[in-house]
Image (cartoon, rainbow, N blue to C red; front, side, top):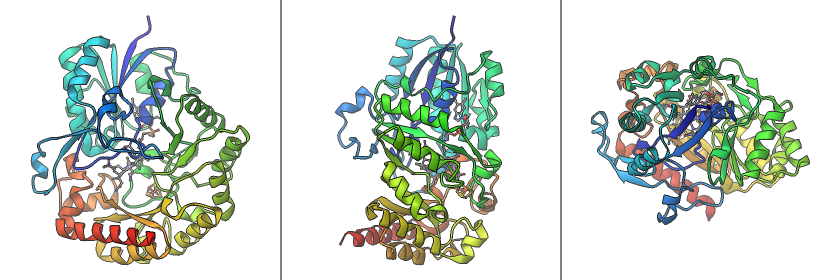
Length: 431
Ligand code: B12
Ligand code: SF4
């Protein structure tokens, strides 16, 4: 008898959340390795194509597959009471999960995706509901929160925590031999309009605010055949938009992205590609920009963070201002729409005094592209995250909340002023 495994992508408790190509890609990759060896069911609270969502106003997808989640007001956690914003629960209503469990259970195992460290309230809700209906099911957590806050995750009462990239403990626990050549289990969705790909693992840089170097070690590439096979599966299932979750998609492009996109063109695979997780402008050459657009890239998010040279050097020198300007020129010359090129800048970084954020925002706007303020989330184990112990209790993951930290550091009014300025700068591009 094959084991019966339930996959759950939990609801989000936060001040804000938006479906910016959010899919539980780590959990689906793990499940893909078990394809044919277990019977799977999925409950994705964040699936905006679920039948319940059909009647929800203002939750339609935009032309690239993004959109709003269904949400309900929720009491703000005590540690965030000083933040003057509404707190919400994003995702399908809890009663739908109760009905689903009663109808589809029992399950031998339940795997739960964890993402942002400060979203663990959603895990608590899911674990409690499973324990209530099927107490004998073994609950397995894996992903970012477990990897970065393992001690905290131990307190939630799951049966197994899969920390980091080593999946051996999981295969042993399930007593199943995985097939590592399989693509992610995308067919577990009834309907799909967005998919995720990851061609590489890790990043060669060492930015002081980021956990990726610590979690992944050296930069590695995944097999091209594997990635193309997964893209073909996504196309067959109807995913017209595909976002990359790579941390350094453009690094060693001659070995990874260029052969991948050349094959996409040869195989005539037509999808819109997106890069929400920031591309490194340093690696955007005119040839690469031209190939990316020809192969279907539609939106370009570039990680810029600050125009201050001192800040850039102090945090890891991943990109300099002239490189952003050069990348923008190449993308525009290759035919990218200016409104689809966005540079991220960190808001609320602890060294904001040298970041000269306002000047950075104006610099981005002077290039004729959009800016987006990315609220800083302090991450334990990173130099900049650890430095934030001056202001917050870093051992309480809710305090990593990206909306909260900039307000704690700069004040609500100052954050609003900077966000208003960003909106104004972006609007001025349209006129
Ligand atoms: C894609 C991504 C995004 C996407 C959306 C992700 C999502 N689904 O929500 C976007 C671009 C929207 C995003 C936004 C942000 N992000 Co982000 N993001 C990532 C990224 C690159 C991947 C996350 C992911 O889905 N991983 C899952 C898969 C793809 O990873 P994997 O390695 O293949 O998984 C393996 C194992 O982990 C394991 N595994 C994974 N999941 C599971 C599940 C189970 C059950 C099991 C058994 C095993 C398992 O198996 C896999 C084996 O191959 C990570 C960095 C990273 N490389 O992990 C940052 C990361 C999670 N993001 C981070 C940050 C800071 C942010 C932002 C705050 C940035 C900003 N200021 O705007 C925002 C916050 C958004 C919000 N609403 O609050 C931080 C974490 C912050 C935190 N406190 O948790 C990270 C770690 C990057 C960093 N700087 O260190 N992000
Ligand atoms: S370049 Fe990006 S992924 Fe790499 S270390 Fe810096 S912030 Fe992290």
